[in-house]
Image (cartoon, rainbow over all chains, first blue to last red; front, side, top):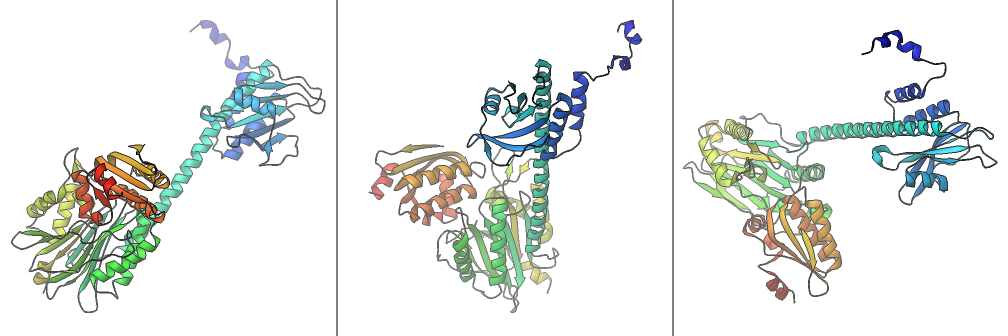
Amino acid sequence: MHATNALFPITQLSREAPCDAEILASYCQEFTVERDLPATLNTALEGMVRNLGAEIAEIFLWRESPSGFVFKTSRGRSVPRQRKIQVDDPMLAHCIEQRTIVCDAEDGTTGPSVCAPILPLGEPYAVARLTRNAGAALFDARDQALLQAMANATALAITNAQLKETVDDQKDTTRDLEFAAEIQRHLLPNVASGTYPVFGFNRPIRQVSGDFFDFFTLPDGRIAFALGDVSGKGMNAALLMAKAASLYRCLGKTIFHPAEILQRLNHEIHETASRGMFVTMVAGTYDPVAGCLEFANAGHEPPLLRAPDHRYESFPADAPPLGILPEISLSTRRVEMGGGEFYIFSDGLTEFRYGQGEQLGVDGLIQMIESLSPLPMAERIDALLGELNQEGWSLRDDLTVLAIDDAWVKNHD
Amino acid sequence: MTEATGQITNRRIVHLAGEIDLEHAPQVRKVLLGAVEQGRLVLVDMAGVEYIDSSGIACLIEALQESRKKNADLALIAVNPQALRVLKLARLDSVFAIHTDLTSAVQANS
């Protein structure tokens, strides 16, 4: 550091007219305040008019297809221009194509003008055109350099405003998803675990779920139950889930024959499903007094029956998923529970993967159920999900489990 | 994923490979629907498919439904055991025509 610096404090460097650096500092300062895109463009033009002695400053937006310009906004003396009408101007075109400042002398009706390209993220976006009064001086090299610096600062400000718009849109989307997720949660039964012989659990891999389960007591004391898995993930799956779950809740209270209810659901879903979307589903009724189940399976992972002697039986689907064919034929199966347990689950459970290794699979699931079998059903499901929630395990799809515990009924008589 | 035209006009063969999941489904859908648009017989070669999830299956179903609308045929060929297991478990083997190889698919559709 030279000692002479102390003799010249910064204030002494100021001149009567601000230097270009000061002009640019002041110009950029305006963009540090949060502004939307129209306000950003107007602020940019106001600074250009003020600092470059222009009578008119205008911005023309570049359109890729069909290529051309449309007038966006102006500052200074107003010029009657129609918005959204394509402007064919070789000066503007040359400026954006060559990405360079273009000057023009006065043409007898207007004064001298200059154009600068505005290139946010390096992409053609707009041209700023400044025009002076007739008879005024041409825009010299210093004016051109200053205008280009201002156009570059404007490009940065445009990028910021666009990013802000994107973030605001994402906030809206996130809020909509939170509402959707809340509505979805209310589509599932809300029964305190351990107070009923049927237990259900759902965890979406995203905010909203393409899986659902339901159960409710019928007037004759039987319990209707269902678990469905919509193809895909995210909002489109969630919308079809909401439809399938609502249809089931409605039809399940009047149709008690499992195969028939799935046929009706198939017909309804097929009428309106799009993009090849489908629903795999198991639906049935459980008679807690007789200890027997009736159910049907349309394209879903085979449910598992665990007998008290630890033997397992699986029940593969005998019809394709709902929504693919206009009509399906499937059977209702009857199973004596004999104090056993019945597990229905979405493939999100069996497709749990440890690290890069093998999927959990049905065999892995059976091993976990066996190791947790001393626990009551509600705690067992919690413990199973707790183990799969540990580090190393990764969920690839929505996860839903529904379990029916015939022994619970015997213990709560 | 690649696509090739067969020797016979109006026959399209789509070769699928790798993981056909939610991430790749839009690209697979585009290729399959494009093939259905152009061909009277679309054969989907599944030999290289390592994994297919429900999003991938939905693409195949949409292509099948579209082919039926225009009176065309779509069949799956050389489905590897893992993908075949998934299709059979969901009873989709009753929805799709599945052939062991190109020759048998062509014979079945000749």
